[in-house]
Image 1: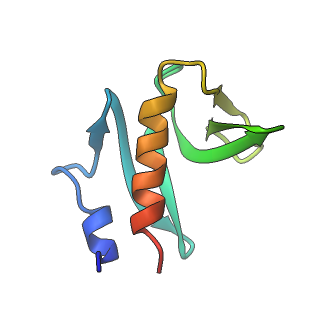
Image 2: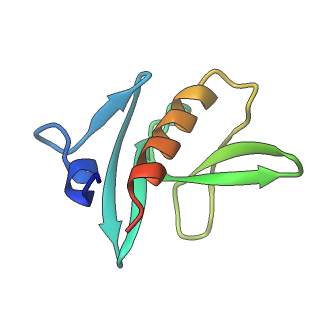
Length: 94
């Protein structure tokens, strides 16, 4: 069984890199969140899954109002974001 500390560990500053996208997992208010440096605009945000009709995409939410960048399955960053999201979510169950 993989413990949560293995997910939260990273390099010296906490950031990892997958497919050219820097990310880290952290706990905020008892919830495991994935922080990502957005490949489109360069801002830091939370990586969340976004379902739009039957297709699955990902959003990087940059603010509390919900503003962010959307990545659909046709964009080149999709595969990297998908591998980051599911690697943390599969291993991050309490």
